[in-house]
Image (tube, rainbow, N blue to C red; front, side, top):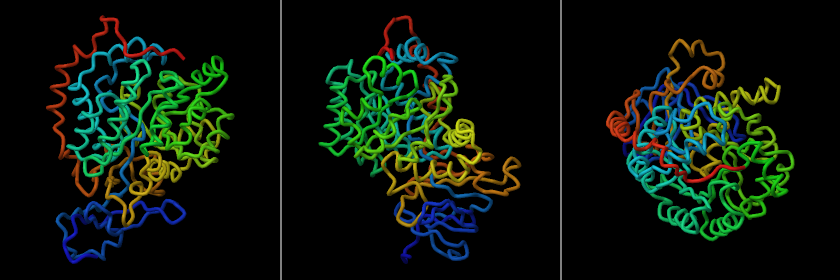
Length: 450
């Protein structure tokens, strides 16, 4: 250890750790020393008695976890939370969401992003992968509030070549921004809104500039069936044909991935990952969920996500973790899959890999970025603790997160947000809602027809 004071010392907690086989374990009565935004050591609480630090946190009764990662969302869409309810996917897009999004201004995006970041910090999310419009504005909010983010400017082919060009320009302009907390991706919307030629051009640009790609594909079985009927190939095969499976690719949802897609994904030369957001699939009544077991069998990481709050109503990755475990048990008909430890693996290591940050976040270990959260397990709903992993996945909830830290900076302490003013954001956003939600103009930014 250095002779100079540490930036932060957290003591007295249990710490979720991974061994060299990535198995989940817990160090009891432990301490975490943070210096220069990195975890310097994970040691016993007795070993840091008297250690000088700028800030000490007494975390007795709490568990330190790697910060949660929301691997696919549309943060500014919190402004549409609850606006389009109880609708099939096609009506949800065509009758409500895409008409309303034609009204979006940069100010709406900014306020939505601020509210979303506040919600995620309070729920223990330290990093999110966002796929939306006016992303310069989202990047500015991320830089200010202290979160980590993987950002992409979404585009449709209906925008012409300018949409794709804006996506590239954004990605190149902002990668490495916010002192390295922002990474970027190219962000075509989906195979059903982006032409094969544009998908192929995106793959070429990704390779040329060393950029990953983040898009929706095979979101549900109807999309896969429509693609097979119209083109004779699945959405995953469309991505392969376009060269996107030779890039670092994050696929959102994938509940429409079918058996014939698995060998295509397995032989992909790029780093492929899938983000699952189970709450939305239940709300839309989709018949399938992300085939996590089959994807894991071919080595593809599956990260946890919420999607946007317009469909999910929530940016709570804690809920996504519990739902993923439960829905997998139900879908597979096997209570031994997913276990609580497997769910925590998806929430930590696999989610970090999904957003391309597997070497820097996703576990609490020396040399990793100090992105971590402290979870209070003293409440009646979390006692007694017979199995700490099960308590975290199935009993704890986002409101039990007491402290959220990114790059060693405390963004929330004892449930108090330190970098965002929520009441001011809510007041301004609510003043803007009448103009935002009007649909009588008859416009929409796109047509959903799969």
